[in-house]
Image (cartoon, rainbow, N blue to C red; front, side):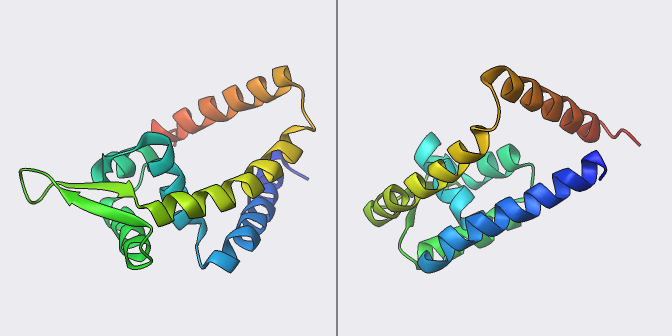
Length: 138
């Protein structure tokens, strides 16, 4: 099996496990990523999230709509009404507290197969390959 096929298969299986954890809460992986980002970073804008995720703002906006409709995030407007700040609601924080331990356990189990040095080398290699792709390797 080639290296990149293995990465693809791992990603597919990992996202399937995440989906199984999130499905009872009617959340997608992207919804979870937004909840997690807000929990880690606090008050932020869709532009900041789009830049961090390396996606277009409409991708973030679609998740914002879903999570706002579920009462998990709230929008606060800045002085310029076009500027929207996002944060978790109490319900969002509570749901995060329920889901995060399950995801953390999954990730810990996966990482337990590697030493800390192996994990750091692997993460460094992934970072370097991602950078090549960002720079337009082709």
